[in-house]
Amino acid sequence: EAGVAQSPRYKIIEKRQSVAFWCNPISGHATLYWYQQILGQGPKLLIQFQNNGVVDDSQLPKDRFSAERLKGVDSTLKIQPAKLEDSAVYLCASSFGQGAEGYTFGSGTRLTVV
Amino acid sequence: AQSVTQPDIHITVSEGASLELRCNYSYGATPYLFWYVQSPGQGLQLLLKYFSGDTLVQGIKGFEAEFKRSQSSFNLRKPSVHWSDAAEYFCAVGTTGGGNKLTFGTGTQLKVEL
Image 1 (cartoon, rainbow over the protein chains, first blue to last red):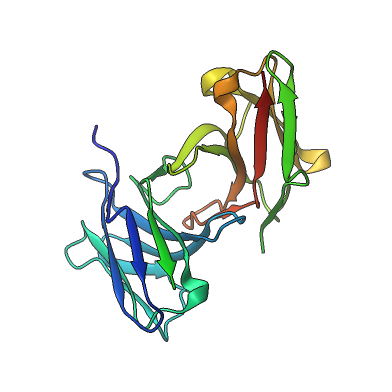
Image 2: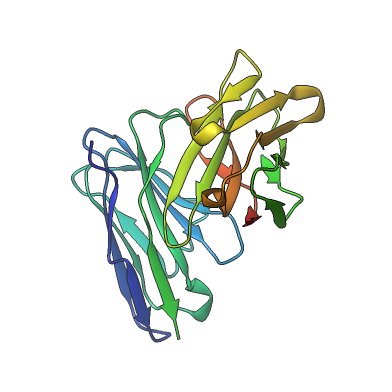
């Protein structure tokens, strides 16, 4: 079974620029998550999709972050404009159902904002 | 709101010694509990999970964890640590029911001395 694919693996941008991350979940997984992991902290949920609908985006800074999952498969997470404090690893995960079991994480995208 | 505390930021053990990583959680209902491991530059790999039933859970790589409801703890153990176990370990709690948001602790960095 192929894992959760994310790209790019690394990205360096200047503050106030925009950036986008891509995630392809495991085939058949209806639920997709984006987590932000700041250095020295545990991952924090940004947004959760069920198919192409948003289930929870309460922790997403909506003034600068946006995410979409148009066809219920791939997802993109965008930051515009980026701030220094957005430097983090952005992890995508997917699961088959809505239960907390069965999460699979991707390798993440490491973003550095300078 | 749920929360997870990992009181040890760093732990150093000698190869072959036993290991215990501590995790305390706060959640109003029966929790889903997880331990993940993260090697540098990698995503999160699931070591083990507890949903219900036997409170002693066996995982991959020789790890086990014990759920103690009275102490709100889910400590991770391994009888004999290998140098390849050096990594960061995260405890997480997931919501039951329809929501499956994972809340992570801040992690414990394990160093193994040869």
